[in-house]
Length: 272
Image (cartoon, rainbow, N blue to C red; front, side, top):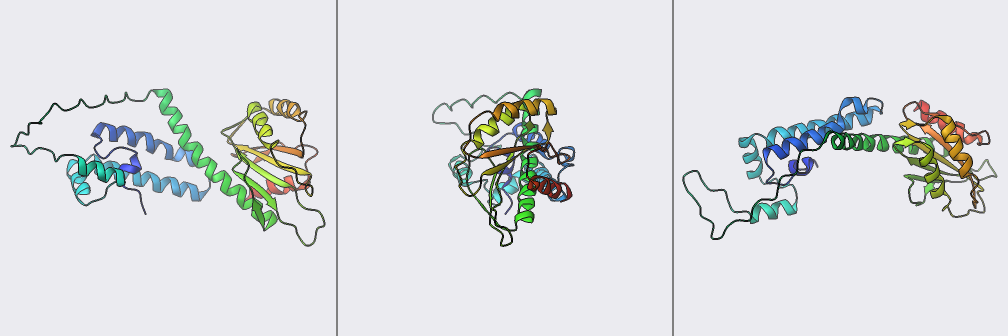
């Protein structure tokens, strides 16, 4: 069911026309074609549909007649919006002056328009959300293609945590696999992700865990190698193998000691 227009634009039911215009510019920028062109077709369609919904909401709520008709049709943005509208007195007619029984409280000051920096941050956050969703979906599909069946557990900081089920033709259990999306795969992200993985409970049947650190921007190999070298000095209950991945090209920095499974998963990610 599509979101009501006020919820879609994240504005109150009594928002001014200027507030609606600013909200529309903020939200529509997140789904610009330039920001989703490198994602899969499915997510490009999601972005296009979202942009169409936002445009429809904007055109309706900035046209006084269309907005009045929309409000009259009983399409509140939420239960709270419905209560707010019900509690609000009707607007005075053009020929009747309504005197309040007591002075009305001054309206809250309107927030200043966002600066160039904050607009950029909002746009980047929206684009990162789409990229993250596409990345996680693709990574899950690669895991399913490789293992057919796997279970998931919870580990803070990771969007995907996979325990592959045993296959009848192999006596050795596949390693656990963790997937984390970050906007920038760099030294600090490597260190932070490694520290998160150190909280992984020990599994006596699986002595290795693969960590795929994925993002649309990636630091030089030297920076990543230095961060990995420093992280590997920390004691761990499980052997950790980290694989930095560029989600724009699906190229990866594969460690020399990585098991063949790493290359198999990277190949699947590239060809999906």
